[in-house]
Image 1: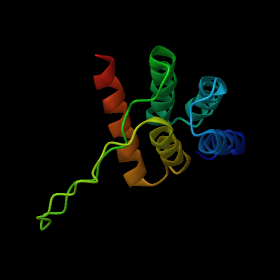
Image 2 (image 1 turned 180 degrees about the vertical axis):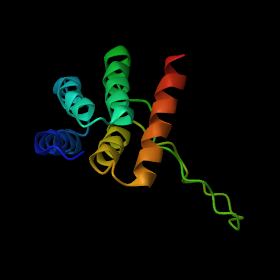
Image 3 (image 1 turned 135 degrees about the vertical axis):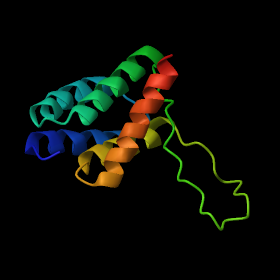
Image 4 (image 1 turned 60 degrees about the horizontal axis):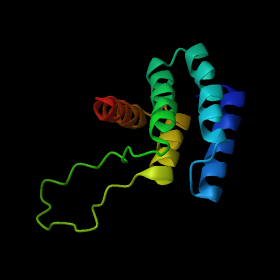
Length: 123
């Protein structure tokens, strides 16, 4: 996102979440406040992701969508037992950082993956 107000709101929200280490009452309000900037910048994938995120939190009172997992390397033969799903505040902060740097193609693909997970969870 390029709008300075949107970036400021994103930074504030990320900081709040990292400090509190849980989703606060104002999280949904801040997500709703950021979304119009994504619409204004004609970033439909981000606008959708923000909407799905705050609807998800409103419905579930928590954030249970995990961080998208990296694909294992082809030559990787060992099984990694530390490959746990990361949800909650960490996952939401990760999503917000992706949104903040959505100009990178790899980040947009991960945002799309979050959107698919939101929709699958809602079904």
